[in-house]
Image (cartoon, rainbow, N blue to C red; front, side, top):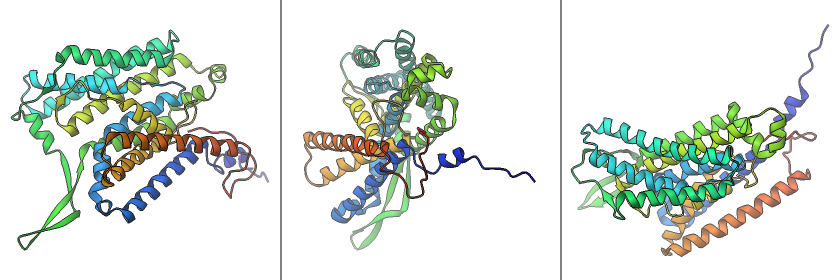
Length: 373
């Protein structure tokens, strides 16, 4: 009688969390604990609308954090995302104003196409220079940031561009929200009780959909596996037959597409309008969200779900500072810097100790093989 032996290596693969999974759990736990403490100590946080406000306003940050995570996992960097968002908002606003399309639905999809095309063009151009000419990504994307902002200024003449109040798209965007009366708050006026419903904007749905899709892509596709391999060890990836240049190009292309989408989402939530100052420091916030979410600058480790939690941590921190009466911008900058430093040190300590076998799950047996994702 033949006995079928289980694949012990495959079994051990699931007996221990990967670095990315561990860091994601840590960032998610910190977000939950931070929010619960805020609910218990600050009256405004007891309203569900505060959580919706964070996801609504930071939907663009969630998307570009995913864009940065993809590139950083592959061992690169992209600091042009803020400039691409600025250019996208300006071009899309001018397109809506001068296209002559009166049908709001058709105008929506046409504008969406313009936004994606802008992001894809920047992603492909920068990706080609970085991947095939092997130029440093920091230099190329820095130039991309200046190029995008320069084009924005040239197109607008240095002025802000807005849509007229009677524009059908502007009216349609103002109504683009989901009202949830069950999570609303009561308000008494002249002896009558009114319910202010909690409002969830559609941009939040888009941002969450992006997180889910990119997670599946990075986790279960050949492109995702190749990206992790390249970020972990480029020489080993080449020896395995992975097309390093093409994979790296694809990471920047996808990052550019997501940047264009983030610009479109930012414009939808804030009202159609192009301003030359849009997107300043967005790239720094996206990098911070990715690192707080567990993405390593050295590459090979990262998870877009962690980046989602990173963006939510920054958003929650901003709300805590705001409700505490510290509304000056420098307080937010200082808090973000301290939070980023704490997470970088924490990552170094956790991964350093874990690499020596001192941090593992109770049910882990033996030394598990390294899996990144």
